[in-house]
Image (cartoon, rainbow over all chains, first blue to last red; front, side, top):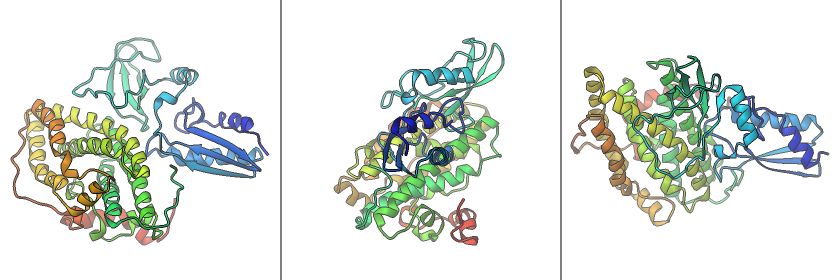
Length: 163
Length: 260
């Protein structure tokens, strides 16, 4: 029988399979956790509709809790409210940066005006600190990231998109 | 509202059909975009198109799962996606026409993602709370799709002679298919009256207002409306649909019940 505090600590050790620098707890996708009898109920809000990591994360959560002594693990998916990158905490943002991924800037600005037409958004390169960077694509190796390039150190890097 | 909620009573047919149509649009466009994987002109676009396909297939999973629950006959997302016959799909015809080239693919994406933004905004307050949750989530994704496609339409339209010609040809080809988005039909009227979602025709003016500045900046000419009509919403599809389904359904038809 696990306590809720123990279960939270365990899940904080489960890395996101595609961005292993942060845990699923730090990513903000674990919305609720309850322990009753020997069952642990975990409520998960997926990041992107089509994120292929969602199912892997579910398996990892289940395996981790079962191995630590939970008798049963019940996973629930919650869509509302939709996940936002605003749920990524400050410490996790620094971990992302250290890992080479620029964390989402500011608030996700849902409902705000959406500028289009060649938005020139420059970011600070997570490797050399230069601001002389350019966006290559609003999409990247995973649904949650955009692709940038540093024109100073010439290295590509990724940006965790605000959503 | 969680996905685990079970619906025991069947919802009105129009409600089911409306959600199914949304799911089918996402599924079929997702299938078309996924054809680009490994074939796009540059690697950044290969990733972008695959990501957009993934978002759409993810939305399709949520929507078809929901449609299956509303229907109450025990059909899950896989049965709905892979085991229906052509006439049972409710996607608009524009979703199924071949990609042709990067220009047509990009123009279709901008036409549909603009529509999606408007539709998801309205559906985010739907009386169907599960649909509202899916809409709020999908809206965020649609915004990225629109920004990305709009940038490319401008770059291609206002680009070289060749890129301009191809993009204009794509707009000329696709524009007549967009009439189907807004054509009045009984399903939309019933759903609108029930407060579940807007009749799609209500969105036409806002949709044009979103797109016309993009096409103007891209130096593209928007064709005049013609009497051309398509009826994918009613299950009457083009000659392309059967080929698409043959590819998409192959695994489930060959190995019934197969799971990953």
